[in-house]
Amino acid sequence: MIWARELTKNFGAISAVQGISFEVAKGEIFAFLGPNGAGKTTTIKMLTTLLKPSSGRVELDGLDPATQQQETRKRFGIVFQDSSIDDELTAYENMDFHGVLYKVPKRIRAARIEELLKLFELWDRRDHQVKHFSGGMRRRLEIARGFLHTPKILFLDEPTLGLDPQTRNQLWTHVKRLNETENVTVFLTTHYMEEAERVAHRIAIMDHGRIVAQGSSEELKRQTGTDSLEEAFLALTGTSIREEEGGSIVRMRRMVKLFRR
Amino acid sequence: MNAVYILWLRQLKRYTRSRARVTASLAQPLLFLFALGFGLGPTFQKAGHGNYIQFISPGVIGMTVLFNSMFSGIELIWDRQFGFLKETLVAPVSRLSIMIGRTLGGATTALIQGVIIMGVCTVAGFRVQNLSLLPVAFLFMALIATTFTALGTGIASLLTDFQGFQLVMNLVVMPAFFLSGALFPLGEAPAPIQFIASFDPLSFGVDGLRTALIGVAHFGIPTDLGVLATFTTLFLGFGGYLFSRIQL
Ligand SMILES: Nc1ncnc2c1ncn2[C@@H]1O[C@H](COP(=O)(O)OP(=O)(O)OP(=O)(O)O)[C@@H](O)[C@H]1O
Ligand SMILES: [Mg+2]
Image (cartoon, rainbow over all chains, first blue to last red; front, side, top):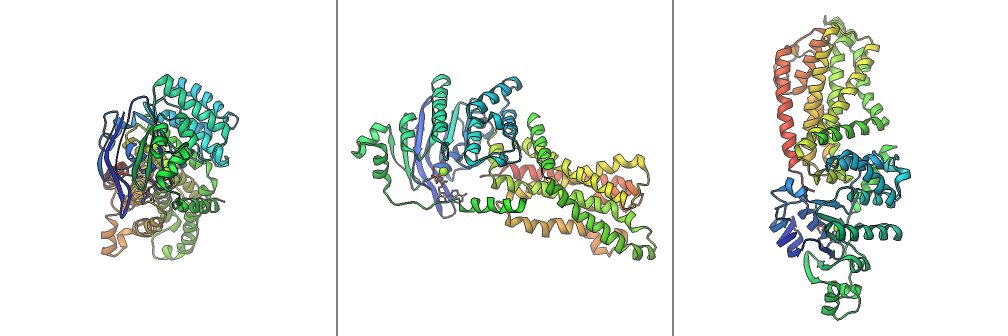
């Protein structure tokens, strides 16, 4: 379903992804793990038509995301790592906007929006502008929106970031159900090892733009001679802390808040 | 088609919900209208050109539409910075229809602002000469709005942060406004200014507006309409092309 060979992305001097190769079979749940800055999000962007690879090849359901963008976009759904909702719109309007873009028929759209907003406990706040939401509520809305249409492939980039345990549980239950009943292929990233262990059929560990190991959680543990995925992860990627990024966007949010009022 | 509509609707909702922006963007044209209109009025009259408020009002309306449409286009940078752009760019909808929806939405809000300013001008003493030509004036406002929203969108497609914003204001918006004949009769300006103005879409927009509203023409409506519509098409194509090439 997803296929990558020697996939590479350079940003000037920074080499974010350095010739990675992997395959994800139809109906598989595939987890991408790796320290901050490993290149997970960059890889997802190349798979989802947002970025063109510097070199290498990718295929999604037999399509090339770099050239057959329009067709590729019909195949997948995605929950982004960082915010992608419109603050000025209400929760319901954000959902509805998505439904229209993804051509979910009107009747089904209304029913599904209600179902999902209830599932993620946002129904009572559906007519509130998102700018008044808490961080976790925004996140829940992003996730609910990601489930509005049923794609062939679902990308989840750190979907549980900032979520409470109840919602995390709800999310993974839903993902598993989609995978089992609709045979949706799932490509996810997370920093919580227990989540990867719980849902993923196969795991790839990425560090400094390269895949350093891939296999099932059992295989990774055996390979590294450790007894938990966490230990295996640390054995493969070392214990030094990677630089955090994203400082600029936080600064900017603050600036715009000041500017608004 | 639905995608174009929902994007148009989104721009409109954002507009009606940000009252601060509506008020702020009306302040500048008001300043021009009152400071220049009343300040330069007597001098203008003495030079034998008639009522300056009457002359400058179409220019101020054109300016309002210009500023607001450029801003609507440039607003794309916000969407990029706050991440909402990603949501639209991965959707299974052609980028051209997304760009058109956005642009028409932005243009509609600029048009509304222009109509509000027309009302204010009327309060200040401006009189439309021939009411039956009002639809022609609206047509010109709509064309100015679409042209510059598309241009703004195209430019914003190339910018990744706000640093470029000031540059665009100073290098594109201000010259487009001041060299357009919005504030002075182009016919009496020195040849170099007339020459530059003939490359400025707003010159034709303001001239069209002025002809429709007060019956004073420089290029004349057929030229205005032809040239401005050409610019509109050109900029829609240019904006659509740059927008379709955005990477995140
Ligand atoms: N647009 C860009 N321009 C320059 N460098 C970039 C850009 N996008 C990503 N990078 C760099 O590429 C590298 C990989 O980033 P990426 O976002 O893919 O990491 P990640 O694995 O998703 O990390 P995290 O766990 O923090 O989300 C980082 O060093 C980052 O700074
Ligand atoms: Mg990431």
